[in-house]
Length: 260
Image 1: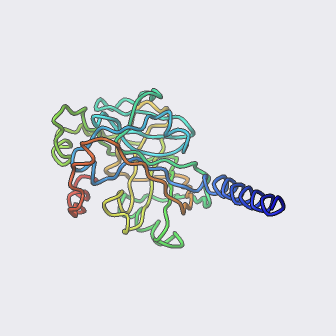
Image 2: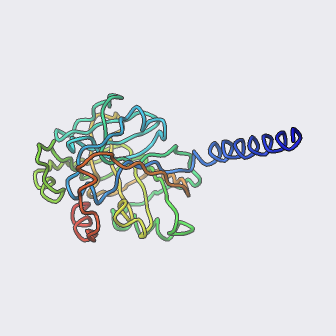
Image 3: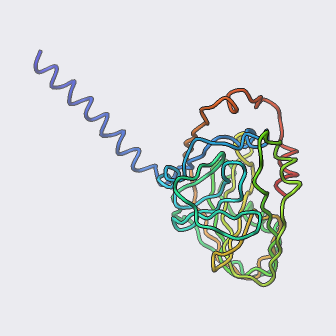
């Protein structure tokens, strides 16, 4: 009996150890996400997850803040809040997010873009480059941009309007011949309702003082890095606003209009 118990204990320990090792191995290739894009579209702008927790799951990413108070960009482990004035502020750990996506950025592919291409050409270029459209990609561009157009929506007041109405008051900023970083993701079509299918980028200047949600760009000369990612961990809000919201509608067309 004692022998059996020893075997059982050893087996359970081995399973637990394997689980820990598995978690350690895949953690760097996992997207950590708070809430869903459809919840944000419906006006669920308050989340439970603080940036102190989000930062444990990634050093790179994009998102927003409670009350839709600006655009988030995470780069090299530093997180910024780009408010409707276009200025990038350092994020306090106590701030919370209704929607954020982060990962630990470890590029699997690096390439040089040494010709002038716009946003649409960039998407086509990347689609012809990636090995499959069925996994996640974290993507960073760093270099010189002939043109950048970004936006940031103002902080919202309760009762929160849906996102399509909130962005009507967005502030748009344009940059010419600017150095900086474009940060974001490419996600598969099957992520509809959960996240933004296709490409979703934010921009920050090289001095990290300004930026926003990317609307248009023309790359002049930049280095592109792609991190192939195959895992997803999602945390959902635990409050009535999320629980009572109807998330069953297909809002893809609405999302496409908002994104660009």
